[in-house]
Image (cartoon, rainbow, N blue to C red; front, side, top):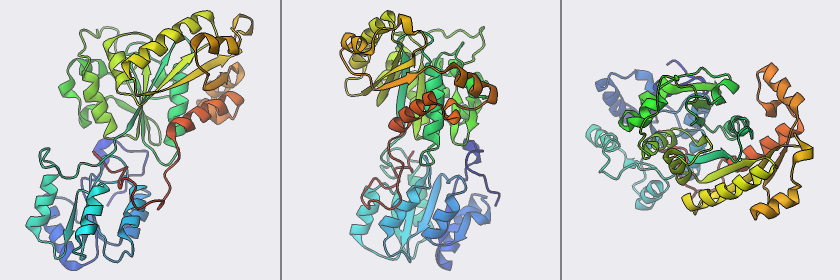
Length: 404
């Protein structure tokens, strides 16, 4: 089997199926199914849950994972560990000899699609696999989906794209999380350019025809920036008008992205369009970026009100960026906080030499280890939250990373 290293993949390079089983009878049944689907024989492997975890640490996890839990002294704990090396969009069918209804319920409640008791018959396994594709079956619907974070600037030139790119870089290196950044300034966005990614068109068309948005669409419009870090949008042809975009087209885009990425970072233009409004509604966190100008304070107040009304339950993180760039014209920080009616969460200084160095080296600002980079990295770590730890809880959402 050809191994696809993590970070060099696209959606089409994931194996549709992978099984780790112990006994010959189960292996024979699984192979019958793979043969009927014309899948390679080496997608069925002889191994334990430890073998599966070791293997999946280095390759993309499949869309369907069949695991034999026999031989495990604590299968729930071992599956939690397995979840930490699997990515979004993978579903699990567990197989074992223990005919215990409590174990069955625990596995399902923690996110597994099904649990089958040996000896497994071909028809039973095939029925379980087919149920995963049936939206009405209620099987294999795994809990969490990717987290949406929107970034929007109170003033033009406030450095939002720099924050998005560097936060994306930070999060993608925290706990092997897959991150996609979406530049919604469809014609003049520079997020992809800044990250050294190949520009691809197609997002504008899809937002007018949301039924086109699927995994194949993502492959066409998405570019890789680094391991587990991707970018979409930002350089549509100037001949491509946006037209009357369905505000709920963003729902289709978000649904597809959240099913395949742990984090979706939205780089939003400074506008009150339907697309911006809907993006804010779907975000669990909004990062509002401003400078310390009088106009920045005024527009921060307006945007705070707009974001709160758009998404009353969402978290707002207020950032002052490029602090010190024009010190003589800046409002004192205390006066700015008084004017907007809340404290600043992150203050990020302006270091033009570090920015130039990062640009010349073609690397993220956070890699220069300057004070500005460290501040942005802290923001990224705040957004990422704690990295997943192996085996911390038997009852955490099993396969928080295995969902569709």
